Amino acid sequence: MSLPILYSYRRCPYAMRARMALKLAEIQVEIREVSLKNKPKHMLQVSPKGTVPVLVLPEGKVIDESLDIILFALQKHALGGSLDAAAGALIGKNDGSFKYALDAYKYPEKVQGRTQTQHRTEAEVFLQELETLLNHNIYLFNAAPGLADIAIFPFVRPFAAVDAAWWETSPYPKLCAWLKKLVESSLFISVMEKQPTYVE
Ligand SMILES: N[C@@H](CCC(=O)N[C@@H](CS)C(=O)NCC(=O)O)C(=O)O
Figure 1 (spheres, rainbow, N blue to C red):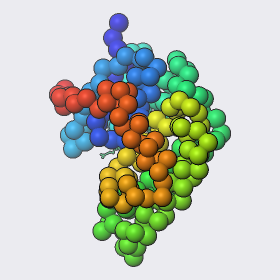
Figure 2: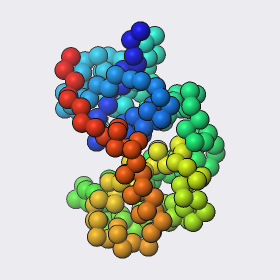
Figure 3: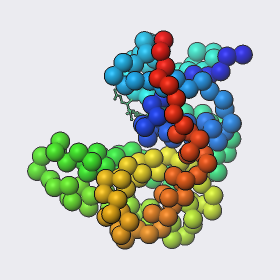
């Protein structure tokens, strides 16, 4: 039987969280590493919006939003917790205001009228919320990594990398430790293995 196909891009945080959820749920997939500048025709045929990740199931069903791929994986495996209201709200903030602030902090020249530090300060509202949660648990909602951790940390990782010296001395020590643990986890390391670019 043919495997589901996952169109993916190694460095995309949305694709990272989809790959991690599928791996945790032990769902085997054929990963097709795409070039974002030259996307495979089949991928664009099944999902014309042209973003990764895209999961194509053997019966033809297409799931082209990373959170929907996580939910699909969740049906097969508990992934350390359900997508309850609290996790859903936190992921919503991550994908909304935090992602916006992350992009602006990374590329401040693209946003007029604000300094890089102002963008960072905006992002810190979310960082503070994560730090507060981590005062209660080692991971966001639990003692083990769960859905929210997987969905959010691929975005905190590039945030930390913008100014590593600031990050390491920032007032978020629990968050720094959380990020380090997740980045060093065998799960993350395994989904970051390099793949040759898929040629149709
Ligand atoms: N809401 C989508 C966002 C996915 C997304 O924006 N992926 C980026 C890469 S990180 C992408 O494919 N961009 C299209 C492009 O760069 O052409 C999801 O969660 O799957």
